[in-house]
Image (tube, rainbow, N blue to C red; front, side, top):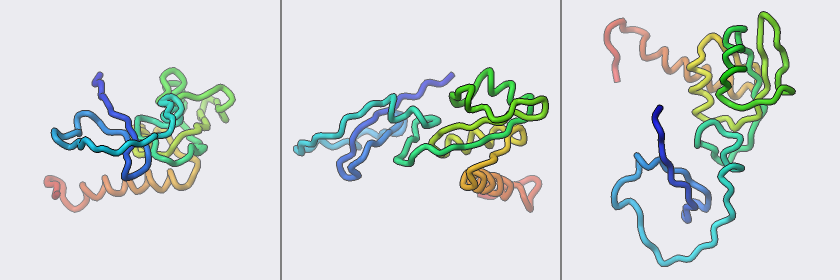
Length: 152
């Protein structure tokens, strides 16, 4: 397992919390300034609680309803990629496992759903369906028209 490290801080020019991967911070990219600021109180547990990964953004969490195949549903129950409560389970039958997640919609969520392929279907919201559809269309474009070469 790879362990990534992050710097979380208040960025004055954006007036918001920013998260930077240590592996992406370049030498001499920080400036020492003589400006005093009073950043807002920050609770990392609260800030990241409803996000998958570290991309929390400023968007509120949404209710995302996912329908898993029975096999993937068993796996999700045993090792969920995002925590859920028993009352979030909407359907649990031999044919389908359906769950409601209250989560911030970000790229990490889209990538996780894409990784699961046809073993999961997004029921709602439509915006997540559209983001996932767009992701798959873009991926498919790389393989259309050429069976041996990839342009780029």
